[in-house]
Amino acid sequence: MPALSSSKGQAYPAKPVRLIIPIAAGGGPDTIGRAVGQKLTDNLGQTFVVDNRAGASGAIAVELASRAAPDGYTILLISASQVIRPLLFKVPYDLFRDFAPITQLSSQSYVLMASPAVPVKTVSELVTYARANPGKLNFASVGQGSQIHLMTELFRTMANFQAVHVPYKGIGPAYPDLIAGNIQFMFGSIITSQGHIRAKRLQALAVSGPKRIKALPELPTVSEAGVPGFAVTQWYALLAPAATPRAIVEFLNEETNKALHQPEVSGRIAAEGSEAVGVTPQQLAAHMKAERDKWVKVIKETGIRGEE
Image (tube, rainbow, N blue to C red; front, side):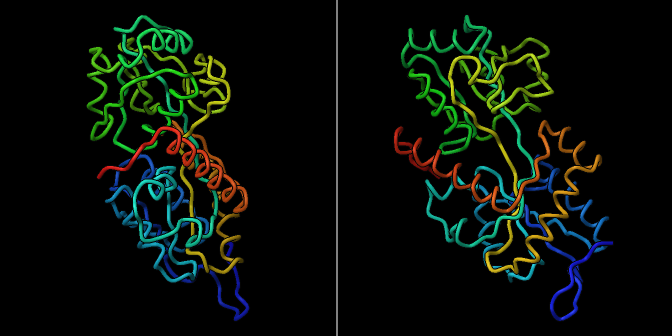
């Protein structure tokens, strides 16, 4: 089994590795993190122990990881939300200063849906309808300052129309309101939306990412469908504390990327509506910076403020 030898002749990993995940057990990032962790356990002969630390939209987990010893025995799974949160809330860490990127695990498009009560079947028709009814359309999110909130504001501003944000405590309760016409449109995950789309309870208009997806191949991207340049995905990545030895970061990058493309892992990721990625640490760093810059601009242009 592969292992990394240090200058002192010690093999890495020589003991279990803690994988901190910023949500409770059972959600998408937990499922993906566990699939990757299990394959690393199988391949490297040391257990990657999942440590679920939910709370404060991931801030508890990130702070814990930022204070861990930088020895390769604590790593952190983050989502796109962890890049956004410090832009709206005060947090006791700096994601870019306090961590070393390892790799991006996955990428997942959202699906843009309209209520059946709204007379639209395409993105262009939704934009035209919204412009004709300024401020009369509502859209849902999982909370003020969430990724879904910010991406919808980005969509709205790029398409140049007005709409009202209605935050929910979780996206599940928004679906009945969208079906009933109390909410006119929203972005939702592929997994939670597919059943409603296939049952024709909701009208799917487009996917949010830069390319079409296998799960809904008939749907265009938002960019293709009338808002050129729009592209937003949910993504998960692995980080290590900043001073973790470079050789360990590179070893974890190589082994994680290998695990991501083994069928047991890539298939589990696909079952979550996501696509396995795998990049270099430098590419992940550039991606995170581009994400931060994008959301800084949206927050500045829309005046969004964080609310606990």
